[in-house]
Image (cartoon, rainbow over all chains, first blue to last red; front, side, top):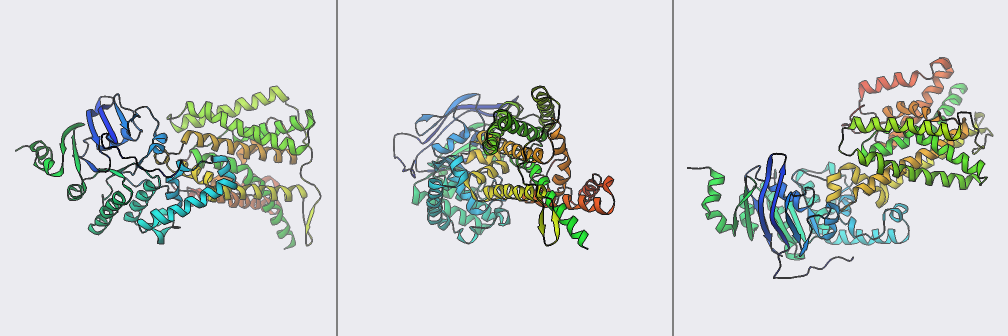
Length: 265
Length: 290
């Protein structure tokens, strides 16, 4: 598999969630949620805390299996596909809490994102011979050129990730997700806990990535300013159900959304 | 002074063997978070496999050693597939107890298959003493030190620089995260067990070639607990340092306090280390001690 080119198909949504329900014992995390993410858009999922946003992400990336409903990605039903296989299909995500491989360097972390692109198995790679070494060198070159430079991480390449500031760690996580060359980039609160400058940087990187690579972005974020600025489409969840969908202006004007956020009266 | 140097050298050299024995424990703990009480029995099993291939089938020792390592690798993978996979998600204590049980089963099985009598392996390491200046180091001690260090160094390089090693470290560091970047975590943890078992089998052959072989060879492995605690359960570099410290200490104790204190001294040091650094000299902090 080479570095995947994006197939543009206007008629088909890149990601479709159909009537998904998920419960943990008696707790209903998601109830009959359906939504679609169109190719090439920035689509946001918002909602109050506990609305089921992260559960939805875990269903999409395969960590939770919904009790009912289906997930379709690029036209194929992937409801039963395992989490690690979904990465190879073109899904990448970042996590709400920073989820880097601590103790590994920035570059190692990013390179692991491209894990599924390397053809040589673990054993030849283990002995570091022949094609495995060549592949590794090519990969390193590509990552340095495209991702490290794009996200301005060159100065920190060989630093252990645990030594970096919070904002930089978030950026490394984004870089690792990009190294997967995803069709769909799923970001879970990418600017949580950042100061304004860091937030603006991150928003710019997200837009850059979409412009340059045509990656479709799915975003969970509490920072409404950022959500309204970046999104083409917004889905609102509340108590595990879909409350509203539409463009930023439509959602902002929806009485149901205002009520969910501000309470009644 | 000369005596001090001589005992130090011998002690440090014999610490190499401790480090090699501790390696298997560290690999499994680092990779999967489990303390494998059956590691000693995997060593014992390796030594018997070597014996069978070498003496009963009459093949050259190098072929026997290769066969042993391969067999141990498969055994490790098999254990992960059957025992560990079945217990996934259970409390850590249940998993660790399962490894205790596994150790007893292996020990019993070895007794049934090969008998309880003492066996002797061929001399793999030259016994001719090595002289450094006028300091004498027994050949077996010297060569097992060299071999141990080479094996551990190879592991260190593997984990630091190869993609397979980095993948293993990644899976050990965060499973969810590893799944998210497309790493097949179950395959990696099976491979980790295989690698640890192979290291154990190799250590077993070396140990049995220096001492003798009975089904109780594995009991010796628990004596490296001190090494693991001093070095930290999840640190390869710690294994080397811990092994050498304990080896040196035992030798010193034997020389100056008398042989009867040799076995006690490491554990006194362990107590001291636990008081100051509960996670070992090199280990990470959040280890759950058993």
